[in-house]
Length: 262
Image (tube, rainbow, N blue to C red; front, top):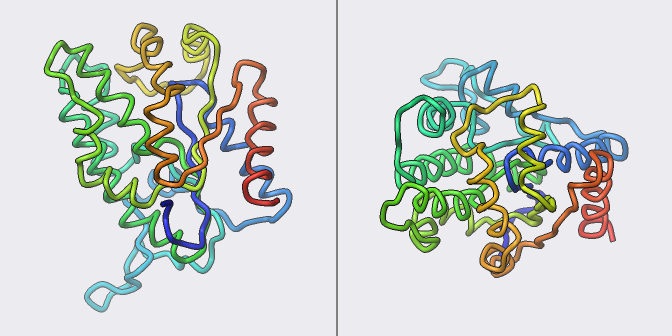
């Protein structure tokens, strides 16, 4: 079953540069227009504070906690994985970066799981329990498809989906699966690589190469990932991201309306 909390949890995942963010932007803008939610942008918070917010401890040792935030002041949280603090920043800047150093799929999977465990404990679960909605780019769905394929590219012993799902952070994530997993799709992974080359943002990620993305594509569109999440109670929906940015956003909003407003 999905998470047992009153807040809505929506995750978009897919190939690098395919339009996950555009789907989330579409839903966010729709909510701003219709409900005017008070928003906590975690990425902005992470870059400013270099830590996760703390929703529980207003004081530490009798002194004001600089990371304390009152959850009652927010209706919507924008989140992403990996995070931009702690383990998440180490993943981005070291483990998956194009830096000439090699880290195995096993190490990457453990890193993602730990980053996820902390994020869920510190932010996602307290927010959902308080009735705050969460829009998030990537989750355990990423680890399920990326790290097994990474292990094959490395020529090491295969890292199975079962191996991924045995890690503590991933167990917690599936025990609190999202209400919606949106997966943008596109006819050719090469089109995604063209988009990546043109965009100003760069993740400097070793995964951003056409061979890897081509082999990754069927895993996002396949039965294994869908069955895992539908078995956890998640609504899995696909979006045609090959039309236009505007269409990607419109399709995401339509899915949101169909699931949560009818």
